[in-house]
Image (cartoon, rainbow, N blue to C red; front, top):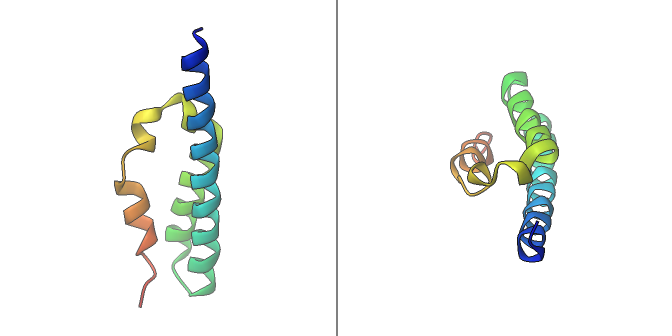
Amino acid sequence: MNKHLLKIREELQEIAEKEAMKLWRIARKAKKHGCSKKIVQEIKEEANWLHRTGANNPDRLVEWGSEYKFKFAFKF
C-alpha cells in the first residue's frame, strides 16, 4: 500500500479513537443527567463501533448526523 494511503488510514484511526472517547464521555454525562438507558446504550454502541471499525469505514466518520443525534439528546 502506498505510504500516503497508510498515513491517511492512520489519521482516520486517530480521528475515530478521539471521536469514540468523546461519545463515551457524552454517554457518561447522559447517564448522569438521567437520560434513558436506551439513549445511553445507543451512544455507547456508536462509540464502540468507532473504536473498532472507524478507520475502515471513512464515510461514516465524516457523517455528522450521528454525533448531532446524541450530542443534544440530554440537553435541558
